Length: 377
Image (tube, rainbow, N blue to C red; front, side):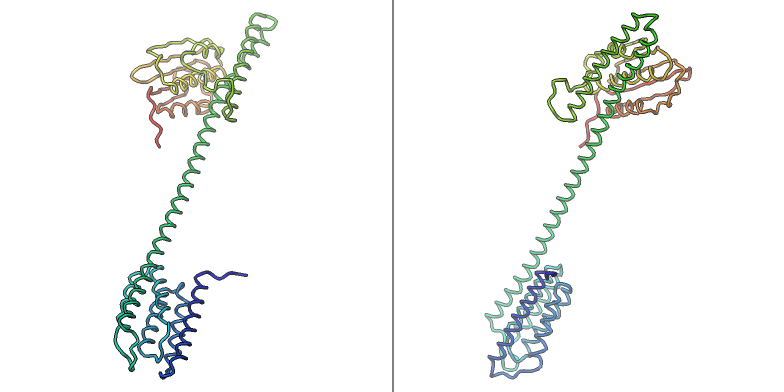
């Protein structure tokens, strides 16, 4: 069974009480002559009061007019003015504050006018009491409206804050997934590629040059160990547990010789400028870009030689990796590895260009500022 709203229940209760009080007043006033207004006006006022929630302005005018006419021309006195108070409160509560003030003022002045038919309906003390009730009802209606508006605004702000918090959490989660994907691609993908290259070399030289096969197998062992360590570190971060293995990446410009050796290529390296005081995030990004660029040479270029240049000048680190292999047009610099390098450079406020060289081969050039821009809040 559907429950009636509380305001409807209150309206019905007030109407019943007021009508009952009006009937009792008419029964007690034996010395006055009733007329048709004693019946019609209470019913009109009651009907307006019942519709005050849906039509607050119309109900205000109807109820107040009926009550004022009742006390001026009806034969009996009754508590019908309570319905005026109710209509004034509702109008103010619904936002019709000016109309409530104007109507209440007119009603009070009308009731203050002297006698009608030999009956003084409102004396001085009653006039003051009615005035106080009118002001109180209008003021209380305005307060409840403002309170409701305040609570709605607070709820809206809380909802917006929660929505913004959820959006921020999703954004951070997306960035973290992207970062982990880059780490897996740069480190584990590189190492697996090296294992594949060295395994092929070992198989090819197993019988002809056993010493080369042994060196290749040793490289496979070391590389696989490094891969397992990196994988364990990444999983430890994902599980948020304290692992014995280090959680910080080990790639660094200080280990550039190890990066070059792990590539399995014959790399001509040229270093210029000071690389001693490079910020950690720039150092990591530079090392990972070098690793990925050399991995692409090993995978796609069709040559075993490359040139690496790293220079530090004017507050920037410039990295250049070139080869002259026949596979220079691989993916035209648009593969996932190149995309990851570009994202690393862009995250630091730098740039990365990758593409075929006019004279043949492939070139990767990264320009990283030594002072990355601050993360905007």
